[in-house]
Structure formats: structure tokens, C-alpha cells
Image 1 (cartoon, rainbow, N blue to C red):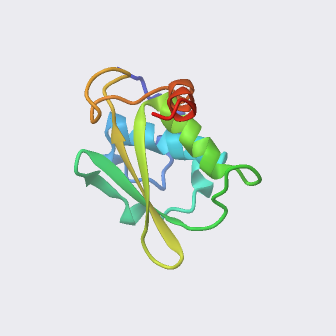
Image 2 (cartoon, one colour):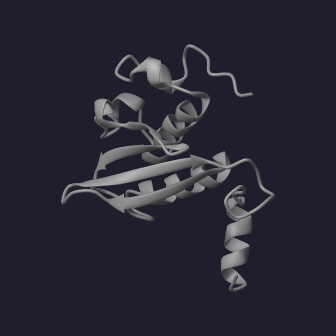
Length: 130
């Protein structure tokens, strides 16, 4: 089990602490890695987060700056998701907002809906046409 100390980004006072689970704390950490900023600068209205989105969590964010290289938030989010073993899905929400939905994965092995590959394995599969 992961330990989330008092200094973990998910402990910021703007986030409703009574809604937090180990997974939602991991998901918030993933967003911080993806945006490359402090949790207090994430473009999220914490009151509107769907803390129980099936077995996952859903964040609504402002839809700007998502790119793969310059302002590389998209690349950072994808790499961090593979490192953290979290499935990430991005959907449109409004003209100015996106939904980032996340679900925990058990590990690197198992059925499609149970596992999440490393970024290296995902790149290898992509390059080999899988």
C-alpha cells in the first residue's frame, strides 16, 4: 500500500479530503505530474470532480495547452499514466473544457481491463504494429 504523507499534493486544503481514497490521491498526483505544476495551479474546480466515476475518478479541466511537445502536458500525462499504471481517457465536455477520466489498473499482467503496460512496452507494441 502506498503511503500518502502530510506533504502529498492531494492534501492541499482546496481538495475535499473526505472524498479521498488511495486511488484518488494517486490520480491527483498524476495530474500534477502531467501539468508539471503545483496542485493549487491545476485548472480544476475541485467541487465538480466526480470522485466515484464507476471504479475511477473524473476531472473536468480547461481545454488549453494540450500538446505533445511544446507545452508538453499531453506527453507528460501519458508517460506518467504508464508509470503509475492508471488508465486515462480524455473526452470533450464543453467548448472550453475536457474530462479526464482515470481508472486504476492492477498491474502489468492480466486481462486487458486489468493491466497497463509500461511506456516502453506500449512503444514497442506500437512500432511492431500491435
